[in-house]
Length: 188
Length: 121
Image (cartoon, rainbow over the protein chains, first blue to last red):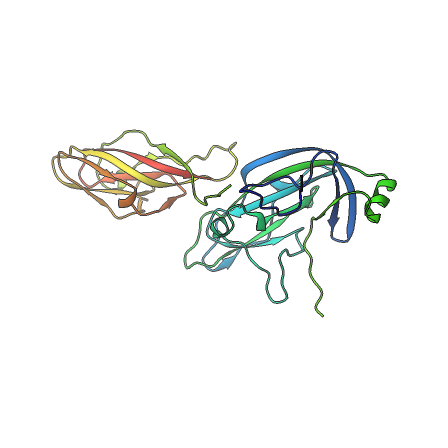
């Protein structure tokens, strides 16, 4: 079974790893080699409502505390905005996701028609290092709520012994590499 | 998975007898789900309104938000004909989303109505 991040498969979402699989979670500049010991699916739920946003205004950057996890856990999320806004994603709060040289790309409500499986919204979260969301109300009228829906998988992990990490780094043992933070990029 | 952005669940309000006329007497015909222990914020869109005009005259039915003089129309008033049922369905109604109780009043009293909504969350 081939598992990898952002997999589109045949119209659904698959876990990125199963029990006993090795993962390497890259959080900012730290690599954490872990073994999955438990995972479970999280059905779609509304995890954040930023609230009212005035016309042509950007909301405060709001941490999605309802997505936070316990220690030694990571999550694989796909999500979409339910209300008509453009959204900047930060992971964690100060690291912009999907930043290109000249623009930080936004997510909007059209994602559900352009990418019905939402695989291009997928991101990974480490423990309580939750994402933050900044909503742009580009319309000429205010909105009364700004809601987000997420779904995915929650994984509990334990640390791998050094001997296994050495095998992974030498290429003799399999591992799935995941990024759980944004990356600012380097202008060259 | 085929996610649909605003696909909700179809629900119905109670049969409501609009016993008094005028904006100051608007009453709820569908109430927003706002239980403190629910997860998330629910909104809803009107999909159908069925009713009976027993007012003794043709009359307008106003549908919006607010009660006690704070009523605001959310869609244009609907003309209902004396002694007849009315039935406005999805194609007749604008896709307005409510984030507060839906209230209504007739210009002439004596209208009974029931709404079907799609609740989104």
